[in-house]
Image (tube, rainbow, N blue to C red; front, top):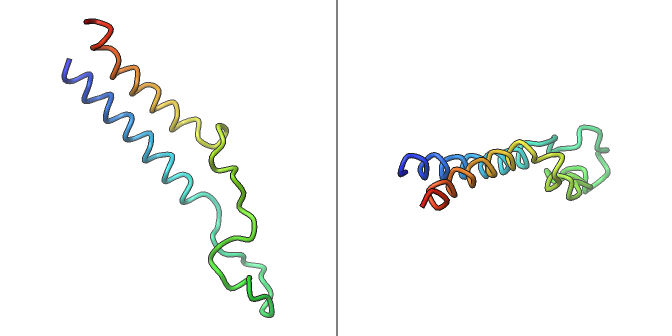
Length: 80
């Protein structure tokens, strides 16, 4: 039972780390086509990133890992 709980906790943590790293490393942080006269072109922040990095389409592998981990965490409770 302890092994199942440990594996479940590890999978939940791995899924969360995967989603965080995917959001951090998705896309370029600088605009390579910025003009020299544009003051906003010299920043590391993109002009429009949007909230697409939080969507289900972008995060389904990490969510799947988390769901499998939750199932592993619930197995000892169901078996009683």
